[in-house]
Length: 125
Image (cartoon, rainbow, N blue to C red; front, side):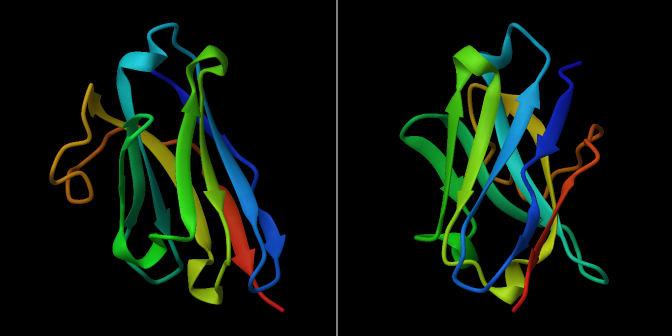
């Protein structure tokens, strides 16, 4: 099972930027579709972005135009570039494997067994 570890969270002011990283342990990393999710206290898990490869990404509506997901397979890492951050983006962010070769059409709704420890993002002035 591919093991993932998130990093890069922190405290940022509204309008600021952060880049999250999702590092993986497998040499077969490039075949996996990876998605970012987030969970704020008292709220349901929310899908954020999913990537198969460059030009093949999905975003939830609330982050379109502000967040960019990309990957560096040579480094076994998926990144989530977050710009123009808003207080409602505050949450713990997680990455997980969601399939091979494609982001499922129902990627945000599926059950996933393996999660990392997450990385906390707080947007506040």
